[in-house]
Image 1 (tube, rainbow, N blue to C red):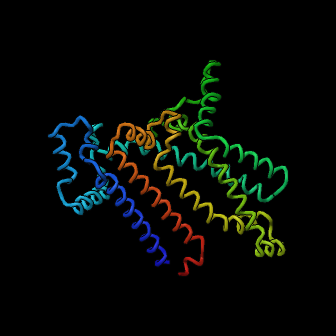
Image 2 (cartoon, rainbow, N blue to C red):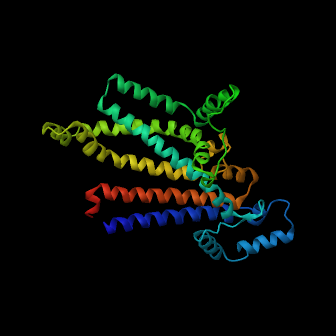
Image 3 (cartoon, one colour):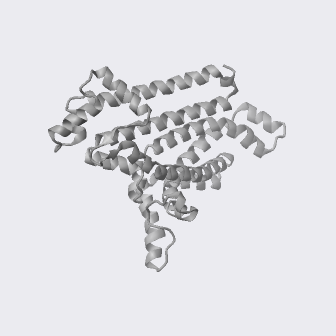
Length: 319
């Protein structure tokens, strides 16, 4: 087991190293003046000289990379000369909103998608299976921004025109403002993201569980008189969890890097909206920081998934 864990950790470190190397080559070694790109076209010669010195661009390339990677490891992603503030301060102020959206929506999509998938797998070909399939098809067919705008119109604008308010239009309130203030501003974003993503988990759960329920050991368990709920949940879902956790880790890692569409539709100042603004303003340090952070989230979540797989699979623990 220890060998497997060390291998997974080694892969994670290697991927982060390759990602950092790619970003460094793209922004610091590619043709062009990195100092000019970071400081802006209107920067004076004095500012350019200062940026060149701060970034270590007047040093050998290997020293530049070592400085880049060690600073990033310590959480120092540089300084935004356009916003006049450290990049990490910008990102840190946006992370709570993105984390709140992702994990709140995660509980909803798991609570909808997995039960619907189990229902479909237990009753294949019946009206219950067809209804669950139709729900999943509708969820997959709706683009996130369309569903978000639909919920805004039906649950905010229409009630407001009728003289009352169900949910706020958007924005983000810190958790310290109170549980209701925090949650009420996130209900529509949560359900927008969850309804689309739940469809994926419904189809994935159904497909995997149908395969598992056709295995010989499942038929043997039924022949021994084991109750159906034990067959499904104790034996069937245990084998399905490996696939579901893999998908969940990938989704969370990707979304933590920025729920771009969601944040723009609902006016939430998260990591995704920060990335969009940075691209529009060509704020290179912020772009680098967001990309590195997104890569870190993805690699970390995949590492956690690997650890979960070790716990689920006795064969892996035996290695």
